[in-house]
Image 1 (cartoon, rainbow, N blue to C red):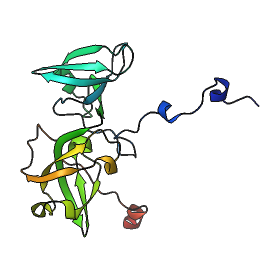
Image 2 (cartoon, helix red, strand yellow):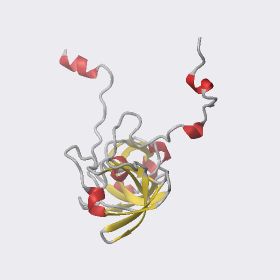
Image 3 (cartoon, helix red, strand yellow):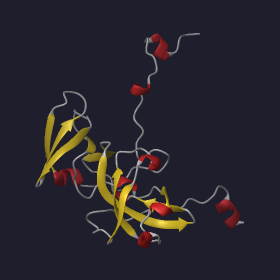
Image 4 (cartoon, rainbow, N blue to C red):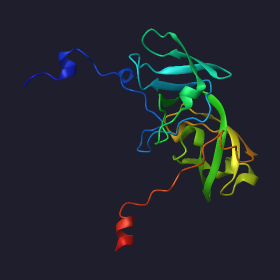
Length: 199
């Protein structure tokens, strides 16, 4: 029997060679395309020969300055309008949003529901459809109700809800629709529930 491909090529599996987990993993699909361009966002171009992921370094007016994260790692300058343009499915027309560089960002959290000691939050700028389980005791008292909004800090580059590390939660008014996506989380039905209802 022939040797496996990796052994034949004298390659050894290393964690560093595996793609980093992303926000879209675990079956939730891609996050919504951004409404605004911020430092730390990452995109890859849908067209052209250089399909390297770029990372936004600065935004000056209508111009974004980025850096390629592979290849020649050269600088890139492009318009925010081109980055933000979307297709009919809500994903980027020219650039696919890949998430954020790991780090702390100021953002918003929405209280979907509270059940005893646990709350289900949604952090739309991370992923509008993914739930975030959070201790209810750590939420400001006036926000312990479904529908409340909070400002907070979170690692928007985290691949999982548990790694968001939400902190500095404080009450706020609902954000403007051009600043933050609306929460889109819908609890999944238990396996077999739809069949029972149909019966």
